[in-house]
Length: 187
Image 1 (spheres, rainbow, N blue to C red):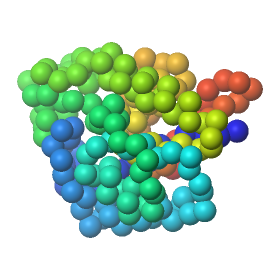
Image 2: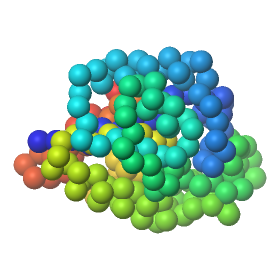
Image 3: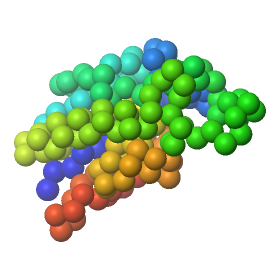
Image 4: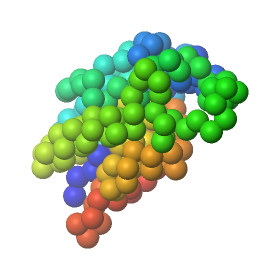
């Protein structure tokens, strides 16, 4: 049975520093480019019926370096909009709001967990339609893909907070006995 393969973009300066990056359109670092090529090597020989990407340069460049032909670009796969917390680390945010959690509180001036879940649900509906034709790749970002994993297995967006996801890692979503499952994560 076909799978959905999640591919997180390679490292950027901000991801390396732990800075929240949503709408800021950063390039990959040299390490991020190396990571993207390595992800492509791991995908070698695998055919995709569709490759859907976030419109951000870091996702599109990762797909390119991994040897993937993007067939669709959608804002629905963009990273969680961090609003006023764009470019700031969690540690810095917690200096003024010690109990803050992106997973439950969202970001002021940005998106709530429910808003991100609604976008990701649209992506998953589209990807599920395409599974009839074969495997589908989704190239995107750390938090949006963590929400994707959570939503696939029926959890709220906050469930993504329990799923660590490194740069340029691969994860697979599939089926077992008709149930939607995570086949592999953060590999």
